[in-house]
Image (cartoon, rainbow, N blue to C red; front, side, top):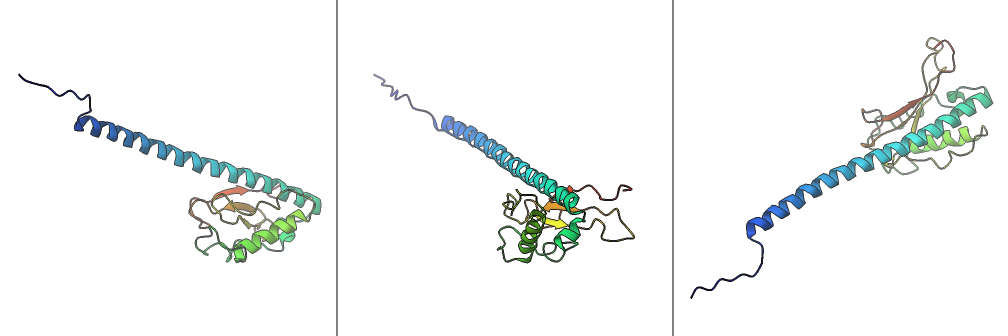
Length: 172
């Protein structure tokens, strides 16, 4: 008499196939989640930059000054942020962070409240300014920029997120 054992289990091949499918789905899910996180960070940064832009434009109108005249600097990012390496999570004593906080304080002092808490981008880097509108008489159409160093944390690289302000001169 021939007895068959029917325990109702899965074969090794079936288990390997199922584990493979689960692995593929997990990889796709993690990739999608990472992209969603990146887009959320970029959206937050663009929102912050938009608020900063409104504050700067208001300060320029209220004071009748260029951004460089308001902040007392015609390139807060120069030598402080550009070429400084990875800015993510630099201390508040770092020159890039100090210049950003000083600029925010001076912009806010013109009567626009609301940007004092915008200190760093979603990756932990200080925002930075290139306040050069009206800096050179020979080129009055230079445009002010507000920026985030982007995911790599290094200012003035391809992944930076910029917003340009409207030039003061109507001929630009």
